[in-house]
Image (cartoon, rainbow, N blue to C red):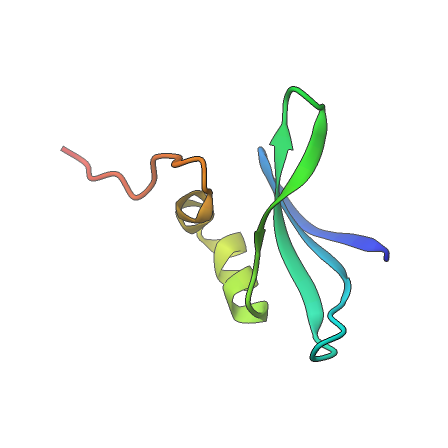
Length: 77
């Protein structure tokens, strides 16, 4: 399994990790940097290329997908 990095926006990076066996589609993932292990870890498995592209284009959407509850889409006062 070869990992291809499509985009990086710290602390996230957007990668393709081979092909899914179930449907022969690319396996798109968002990984998040872990400062304690000093490595990137899988944070979110994208459903399809459109969701993957949306996350790359809209950084707030990536934060919204983060299970750590990172603040996103904040209203301006």
